[in-house]
Amino acid sequence: MDTIASLFSFITTPVSWVIVQFHSVYGAIFGPDTGWAWGLSIVSLVILIRICLIPLFVKQIKATRAMQTLQPEMKKIQERYKNDKQRQSEEMMKLYKETGTNPLSSCLPILAQSPFFFALYHVLNSIASNDTVGVINENLLQSAQKAHIVGAPLAVKFTDSASKVEALGATLTDVRVVTAVMIILMSASQFFTQRQLMTKNVDTTVKTPFMQQQKMLMYVFPVMFAVFGINFPVGVLVYWLTTNVWTMGQQMYVIRNNPTPGSKAQSEYLERLHKHVTQREKVSRRRDRVIVKAIVAKGRDRNEYERKFINGLSKAGLAAQADGTVIKSEAAAAVQAEDGTPTTTGTPKRQQPKRQTKAQRQSGAVGGVKAAGEQEPKTSLTKSDVPEDAKPAAAAKKGGAKPAGGTRSKAQSGQRKGPQRPKSPSKK
Image (tube, rainbow, N blue to C red; front, side, top):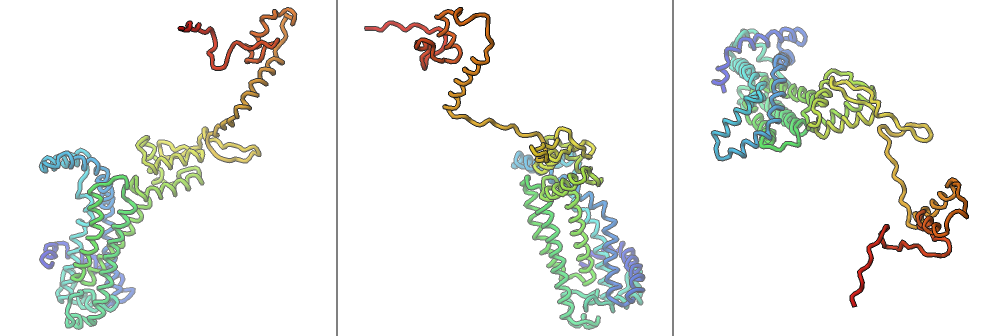
């Protein structure tokens, strides 16, 4: 580990200078030899580094989402060229080049932190060895050795001997308890960070080997931190615990406000956005307008949660626009009940007529014939002018009623209307 740390010695001087500047500020408040002054200096170093790495973190989010989008295409390539690994690699690189994605982009924040991490390790190891390093002179070296965090010196490790720990003014029990608690917190924060990424911010509609790999890393990384953590000085544990907590909080903010499409976090976000928009009838925040604009631009390619959001706006009498704003929709007017109170929004449902029984339909047909006969306007012909032989035909035409004189209708049940074909003579 010392050999690896020495490779980053070129950054040791800047890191030690930043720590000393923060120590001068906190030392004036808490005292120069206290663990608060040196511990907060390390925490402030982490915050400064992470603020500088925010642009890389944004690139990491975009790269991770791009990789999730490409998973179906990558799976097709793997199945198509499963017997030709070279062609498979070539097609993968071609896909990355066409889409402008880079698999290593998701590791940029960790890679960018590595020099600072090893430089800090080198600084704290030098303090434990009673060696000056960077801009830390003899006076600052003695001050750092006196600093304790909850009874554990900054430069001691879980595996240090009792004599070395006692030389720095502490007990082996205090050191191991403090370091064990910090290692557990460090591993737990790493596990929770990866778990919330997998359970909330992953598109559940895509099932690929990449997802299985991420699930495996969710358990591998905490174990790695626990194994290597026993060889880290207390100051490095403070550094790594702080950066894990920062990553967890930063990721929670991103998941809440800019979730991955198709994920559980997007469903929760769109539910909050729908409630906010329907109450105020507008999209007030700029980042919300960006999300609405992207959903409108998708058209038919919207996922289940996005379609539910658009339909919810329509039911509330609102319509999302291409620029991310919403307006009142004229087509979605409120339907008024009989007492004048608004009930539901949208187009009113058409009422289906009740089904009548056979007896009701027959009685209605007869009644309709009579009604029609009663409302029929009088013609110039009188009753005597109408020929007797035309009455049965007229009565039959009006609805199959019985003709006058007791004659039966020629239209028998089961026969077709109109001229009938004569029956063939029976063969006897």
